Image 1 (cartoon, helix red, strand yellow):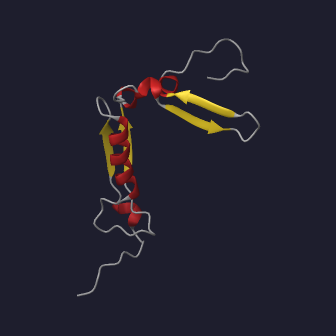
Image 2 (spheres, one colour):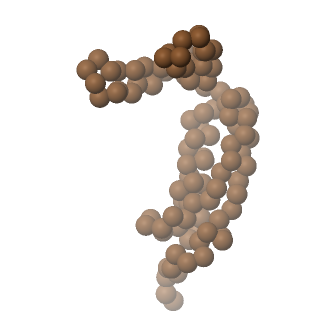
Length: 108
């Protein structure tokens, strides 16, 4: 008995669409579940070098929760590659951006 090996043809027609409701779910658990569907690792025909993932639509993403004090304590950092260009934002700032202050050079 030989092993099944997908050829890569017709993969776009076999993809499924999933709609996920994020209301009341934790962000980390939801992200790992969605990532598994997007990469295709839940597909029994999964092959590492082929794009076997399905499509995912997440609704009510603003209603997803962080547990504990992560909403205020977790800090995301990025760097602009300029000296002194470290930018840090908390989860609260990402989910609820400040309103436009009337200054066009200040982006939220």
